[in-house]
Structures are given as structure tokens and as C-alpha cells.
Length: 401
Ligand code: FEO
Image (cartoon, rainbow, N blue to C red; front, side, top):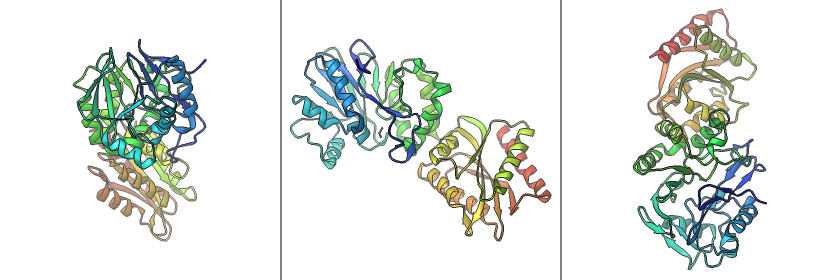
């Protein structure tokens, strides 16, 4: 018995699921776990595409052994050298001493840096190179910065399978299912897929666009990513999501409200604004407490919605540190093309609105900060009503454009 899944006549999923790791890259929470996908092609030559994280290496070895059924492993293709995919490669090489490693020059350099011994076993490939394994011919395509500089993807021209490395991946373990059509992806997976893409690859939108352009010129029938489901139907749905995310275009017209509140007054003001919006017919809204929500979720929601309201208390004459951290993440991920509304609060100094406006205008490309702003002195009061109305009206106007 094993967790192997057959994908095509000759191709098998031999990866592993990980529900024990709490933080992906030791940063991002993965309450639904994650899968590390590896694929084994049983052609005249046998070819393993990538490995798995060291923590689940035993699963990989067991799965490979079962599918090989006593045959030798001839090649290991490393599309992406990051240890969540390559850490088990030495174990594979020890067990299959005739196996050669196919990868890029930079990838071999990284293997050397990590201390992986591949001497005498390297087959270096570059953009456009092809190899034939019997029935199957593959083309290697450079995919720099999706998500590390050494990355490549491999296209099996025989079956139309794209081994897409980190592209088209997702957080979430696979529960024994594998294909996108075995899940209700749009209901159960898209939020984690967005969170995976935006936090892991979000910074490199132009590189993803470059890869999407290359991908559009070949007849892809299947995406076989390194995390999450294998896509064999409705590829256009997932391509469209990636196109939007990598162009920093919102998926939906709606308002994300993120508040930073120390004693509940900024929180109350955030809900007052959300209520005003609902009264005006804007119900595609989400309200989050920046202090209670891991920033990876906020980043993903920011990529989803067209409009963002930041409501922050002033803290030591600065932006509340956790709100600042959220803004810093957006900057680091090259986030752009949104309309912002601001709500500030302070007791002995009200500074956060001006500071957030300056931060956005200085650091986030093609972002507009609405002139209408709510400014609260400790707690909202009747005198603030016109400001709430003006900001809500400005958001409605902007959403309706
Ligand atoms: Fe899943 Fe960039 O590694």
C-alpha cells in the first residue's frame, strides 16, 4: 500500500503530504498542511521530477520503490533547488547509484552550496534543450525567479504535461485526492492558492508574466506543480488567476478593511465604516484585525480586493507597528494598483493617517490614496459623521468607476 497516484499511462505522483509543519518557510501558517509533489515517469528511461522536503523523504523513497518495481532510476530532474523540493535528492542518489541529475547551471551551484554531492552525475541543461527518454520527449524552459533564480520548468511534449515547479502550486495537503477536478477548488482551495502565490512568488510578477507568455505558445494539457493539486481540467480558470495576481490586478471589486486598535475604538470605527458601506450597497467587504491575523492572510486578501482601507491608531507618534509590518510586506511583494482609504486615530497626537499616506505614495506603485479621510481623537463621535460619510461615498464612487 502507498499514496502513489497514476496520472497518465506512464506518469505517477510519488510525493508526500505534510501536516506536521506549522509554518511554511518557517513564516507562513499552513493549517491545512502542504504537499510536496514529485513525479516519476516510467519510460524506456525512468525519470523522477524533483524530490520532497527532508521531513517526508521516507514517503518519497517508498513511493519510488513501489513504482519502479525493481527497475533502476536513470534520471532525477531538479526543476527547483529549494530544499522543500530538493532536500531528499541525496537520499535518492545514494539508493540509485546510476541515477544522473538533470538541472541548470545555477541549480548545480546551489547544490554545491547546500553540500549535496552530485559530482560525476550532472547533466546540465539550459533554455530550450530537449531530451528523449523513449516515448517521451521533454523540453527544459528557464523560469528564473519563479521562485528562485535557478528554477526551470519541464514540458513533456508527448503528453502535454508541464512540470511547473512552484508555478500553479498551492498550500494544502491532498487528502489522497490529487487532481483539481477531485476537489471543489474554487470553494475549498482558492484562498490557500492565492495565499501561496502572493506570499511566495508575489514579488516576481513580471517573471511569472514572462513564463505565462512562454506557456501560452505550447499545447499544455496538464499542470504538474510542486505543491497542491495537479490540473487536468479548467486550466484557463487557474491561468486567469495567475495572470491577475502577477499583473497585480484585483480579482474582485470590493473593500478590504484592516484595522489596528489598542482599546477597541479604532476597531469600532472600522466597523462603522463597514456598516456605512453596507448601507450604501457595498457588501463585498472583509474586516480584519491586523494584530490577530497573520500577515500572509492579509497580503492574500489585499491581492484579491480592489480597495483597501487601513484604520490605524497612532503609536509612539508612528504607524502602529503591526500595521507598519503589513505595509512593509506589501512593499516587499511589489504590491501595486490599488485604491486606499485611510482612517487614523490618536489621543495625544494623530499622525498615523499622514504617515500611512506617505508610506503608500512613496513605496507602492500605481496606488491612489483617497483624499477623504477619517480622523479620530481617541474615539469616534458625532463630529466624525461627515468624514465617515465622505469616505464611504468616495469608496462607492471609486468602486463604481
Ligand atoms: Fe516550494 Fe520555492 O519552493
